[in-house]
Image (tube, rainbow, N blue to C red):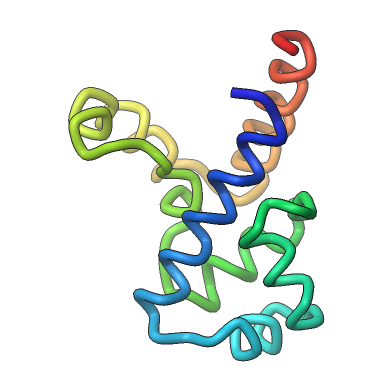
Length: 110
């Protein structure tokens, strides 16, 4: 997956989770301490999200961090339960390291 595609998928997932939480972009922006336009840019895949905002978003949506990164179908999720369990067990700092690793691998792949 190219980084541009990643941002779009992340944005779609963020919007989906925000709507499930019955939250407006303005409400999420306030809880994460960003401008409402920033949330819109994230959801439309126009701006990359900074790592320090990920735990704040997850907290605002009352979800574990890994759920922000589940962009795959339910069949794929069943096949990848070991990976999901692994991600659930990681701390914020460990997730930051994993996310940075994925970003670097994407650079190599592109």
